[in-house]
Length: 164
Ligand SMILES: [Zn+2]
Image (cartoon, rainbow, N blue to C red; front, side, top):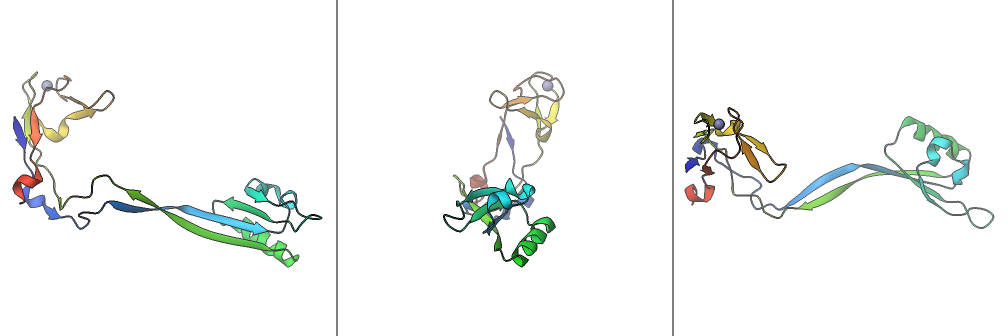
């Protein structure tokens, strides 16, 4: 069995070693709140309304909505409606999603040497990086020369075996 060696020059300490938590910024979310009843909002804004209270004569109207971005149209409308004595609040915030990884990051970063391995069907020597993978039905390897499946035998050197 051919051993694909780790390129010794490529070994670096992983600055994120042991890390198993990632923070991914989510798209900006803008919410608005106004005392204008949904039906009185311009049509383009109505589709972003997410909740509202009944409004007069029962209680003061309160309309909340969520929109992707703050654009000029929204700002202009907000300014105009505030001038008319209404309220219109806009709040933008970006949530951060926390992702937990099952396996913490390793101590080292490294690359493997692009070792040539022999195809057992066509007997050509193929650089390991040129072997094509297909994951449709479990992972199978395809020889780029003859197209046969799983004709290579090799294993990857383990970092634990060289860095002790
Ligand atoms: Zn082959």
